[in-house]
Amino acid sequence: MPSRTLRDPDAARRLADTFRLHQQVLTLDEILAGRWIVVRLADGGGGTTVYDSYADAVNGARNEPSRCFYPQIRPEPMGEDVCDFLIWYTRTVYNNGWRDDPSRQLIIPTRVEDANRILREVKW
Image 1 (cartoon, rainbow, N blue to C red):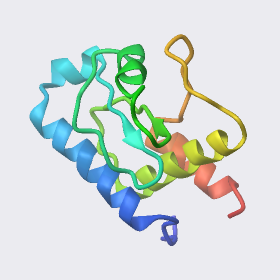
Image 2 (cartoon, rainbow, N blue to C red):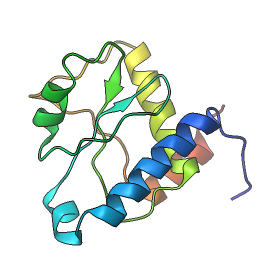
Image 3 (cartoon, rainbow, N blue to C red):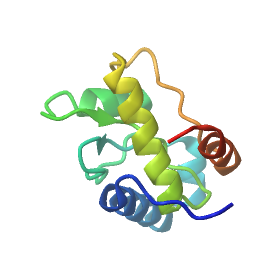
């Protein structure tokens, strides 16, 4: 796939670094059990606290003044291009009215193959 310019390279780099950090610190068993982080949509920052469930992550960010999203830490590498996609995707659905709730979760493509397919199909 030809390289493309990232929409928000700083936010993508920040989120990719956060994923790498947690993938190095957490055990594979912890990651596979499901761990979540809170990430600010504005700049891709945050993500320092790890939560055991999606609902815990949403509830943990209740006092966060900016809009956030709640990705699950995955065992596979999350490069800057995929992180840029996650931020773009989530910003798009938020701008179209989605709001997180502990009882319902936004489904974000987490497989690299799915993200690459969508990146190829979407007209930027």
